[in-house]
Image (cartoon, rainbow, N blue to C red; front, top):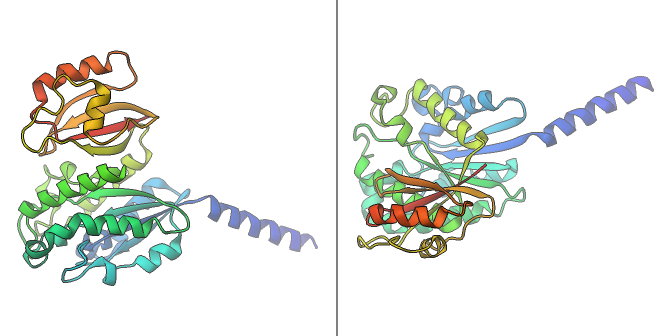
Length: 295
């Protein structure tokens, strides 16, 4: 009887531990799958698992060559691991697709569908019973054109991903900017080596665990060099950006189309509106995105 009780207690403990773990599904292409570094053991999801520890379970759902575009040579929609993601019932999903979309045979004829297909992917993942939080990961830089993958199209992909994030109120993880200064981390100009994969893991780790997190990107209407801030009050500026201030937001940062941070300010202080107006006089023609942060 004692052995039975002990065995039952161990079983319940194991079940509790499994339920208590936060599950993360990493959707992506060959960079996620670790194709260029010998497989999943050397890919960023494995390093992320090490960084996060036993309270998390990180699942690698990367498939080489896959794209976000449905009309492409190898869409994640039909060649990826969506069924595995659904059955895994993750609490968090990171999407790191877009690199293979830049190939001429994919991008040149179908780039207009990229945002619609990305939104469709988000809608699909929102159907998972565990109601996961979805993070959009910006693709790593293209150091040198290879396999048809190129930086010109990638920059457009990045802009579209930020636009989707703004429209959906989703968080963005920038895996592009941190790796730009390290061309030595890329074995063929496109695929990160082990050091690059480790860097991606650290970038995602910081985003998931940092006390201050990106809440959302909001695209302004500043597409024709218009003065989208000017003397607008804080609320009017956010309305122009088609986004309300999240209740737990503490800060705001403004970025140009190229990703350069133009200014930042607090959002809960009485001087917020005045500060934004002052910055607006200087940067009104440059602001393209705003980013909210929370504690």
